[in-house]
Image (cartoon, rainbow, N blue to C red; front, side):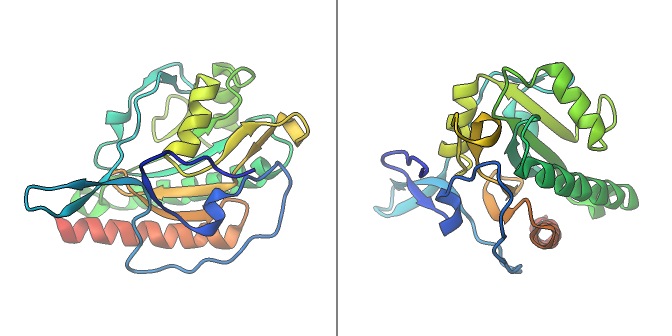
Length: 236
């Protein structure tokens, strides 16, 4: 099953972005870190006043979402912040187990980093966003329990577990984040979804894609996260 593409948009993506993974664990492919991270994601070309073309990146669509504490989520709350994103569901019997453990490890490491630096040296803020693709079963209470089990303090706002309309979240995965999510009665847990983590810069642009089941690739993500912080500090 392949990711559907939006007509008229230019998608720049890695080959693994368009694949849809079931909740089976699998071998990971290696990725290497780069000081100059690519800019990926949904974009379009528009004509400018000089007769040339400018690349315009899509903004995060505004959906009706709530987090694990029941508070509404608004995309403008992410302005100026680096983001680490994934899609999951709490009852996933396969890849989400490894994804959750790896994301929790990254989250814990980054909390230590944020606590060790202050002021401008801390760089831009950092938010973790996990969208459930099974919001009917993943109630607010289920997500709150899942968050605590993955090391998120109660009432914390730095790792949000988001739920909303199921179809809208599936479209968001495909049309904005370049990932895949969908119902499949033959898959373990009833859903197929990508097992990748995404790294977005403070402007909301996708800068990296990583196998969330691979501890090695999660280390690459953290190195690239440091590279984004350096990039941000050089622009200030």
